[in-house]
Length: 484
Ligand SMILES: Cc1cc2nc3c(=O)[nH]c(=O)nc-3n(C[C@H](O)[C@H](O)[C@H](O)COP(=O)(O)OP(=O)(O)OC[C@H]3O[C@@H](n4cnc5c(N)ncnc54)[C@H](O)[C@@H]3O)c2cc1C
Figure (cartoon, rainbow, N blue to C red):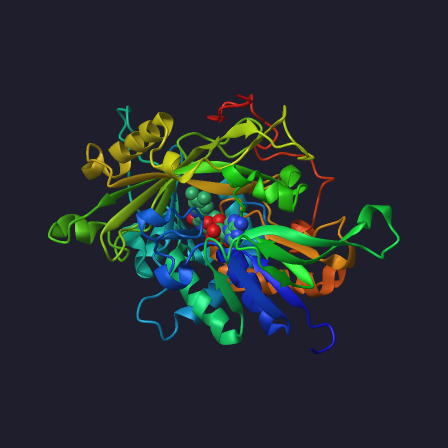
């Protein structure tokens, strides 16, 4: 083995695990990914009976470069956009679809977040890619560049003046075909030499193999030398990397906290509500109207930003897929599920923590979500206002305390033997082609990493718990059973 080459065991083959695995392998390490679901067989499009719960297993995700004041994420998104376009080359079906993204405002005025985004776009020479509906020059430019038809007009309901919502069309935005991209990345990883162990027994992480450390530091008494999978096998590794949300397995206790008890301070699981409609190709009017050629990804905030400047959450819709599926997501309320936390979890709120509900309890969306989606449909997609949903589901976010990812070595383990790469916070999928490179830089170089994301993704137990993680079980989003 070459100097500095490590045997790395990555747990989880979602967006984060795949991206990290490819980058680590390319930087000279010897990587094995453990994953409990058979993505090698189902190509990230599992049957219902496989009961897969993973944010990355999804038909599409939004790509946006608009990040308000967060210039570092805007720049990362632009880097990622270039990489998606490269990935697209030579593929029959693009993984990144450049359909644009229309950000519809809560009123006829432009919101504060948009002004911030436009300022940062201007700053990086990208203002020409954004078209503000209320700006006559932008509208003319949009027409000239072929984007005019996507600057859609929607009348504000319950008003007599027939005013329409203002909107910004981001021509850099679009969608990624997330499951297809994961499968593509899986194949890239295999080609790069990454090994995979899939399966509910042989691919499922059970526990760390720990040994006493020779490092003379009370806080680093343990070193991880590998992992045990559920089939009882022991796999030796120099570093174990946790990539992605690790759902506690009810019958086996708390998986992720047994693994990494201190992650409970950084992260919280919360559910987004997803519904779909099915368009029949025979209905040529709808088929055409909602195609990605005619219809952008669209988001709408039904209310202005809160008094404290916080985002009030939004509803979003994708153009139809090649199979005729229209997906709508509601993130106005991300629902938490607080349950009694197992003994030994270092951070809890009133003895509880929020964890994903079991798969079978995630097949319906809460009434608040359905009500908000119906109101959205009545304004923006009236053909579907009364239509039955084709599918409904709760999909679990891994929210971090400040919406930034957590990518770093875990303190407390000697020899830098445990690394974490998670905390997607509802916006991680778009970074798949570059996330791993930044993470591998941090893995290889820690504080000397060149990545401009290093400081944002560090282990940060010193940061306050915000981003809704401060609410706890008494918060209005909790649908859990509490301490019962
Ligand atoms: C509703 C919703 C909407 C979103 N929308 C967007 C969007 O529009 N744009 C965007 O960029 N991002 C979006 N995101 C965020 C994005 O989906 C995530 O950041 C990303 O998919 C997270 O990937 P991951 O690999 O960290 O986690 P996951 O996709 O959850 O993967 C984790 C993997 O670990 C495996 N695993 C768990 N436990 C074990 C174990 N014990 N042993 C072995 N394997 C295990 C799981 O099976 C899973 O495959 C959204 C997220 C949600 C929930």
